Length: 326
Image (cartoon, rainbow, N blue to C red):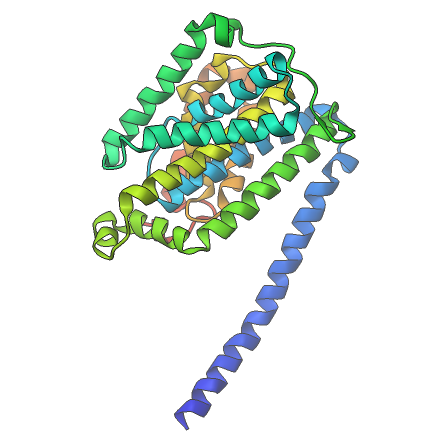
């Protein structure tokens, strides 16, 4: 009798969840169709350009969300790995004749290696100390990029980066870059979704919730922290590579501490612990930045106010998991 009742309850729950699943699939399909069809509706290249920068920050924030949202590591040096990817692509394409795809892959892997190099000595550092070390790394990278003129071009950066080409597809227009960015976002989302759904993802969440308890349960917390930090850095390298070919120039001013802070704010506003949640933060903060462009000196103040308001009324972010709600 108990088994029959249990099966009945399970059947009811399954039947009740079907409309919700169908609704979710429908909403997702409509969103994907709108995103893909955006350039067909919006003819103004200025707005497509804004969408392209949203794409860049989406890739950055998805990678940062793995570090901050899933593993609980506050990194304020994410812009440095962004810059490593950008400079790697610029140097490879302008001085060594690399095409875009190999340069993209090398840029991502180089950012991953530097993430590992920073992650190994900081694997046992927690909280504020880890945050300070990442700030220091970010500033060291920016100062080196600015001072090492023969290699990085100094404050003037590297210019005349070649137009990217993938097989027979020459990427020239804003629309071309938009679709290239969507491909990179799709790759980022799919690979990170598979990762966080695996045992590695469960280990990352365990470290975020209680690092000591995770280590007692047999999780090699230093190793998993290095993995999360390195993999998140890899996606920052991809975003930097995309930025380099999109702007056709790369300078140290694009990778300041302010950029790392903006990425953190985007992730927090959108919501941590969910792969798609940071996208809402990217959209809101990018639109706010554009709307208040005439008030450039108050830009960070306005962005900070938006973050405070969101945290007051929605502590876990707009679409974050309830686990972040105190």
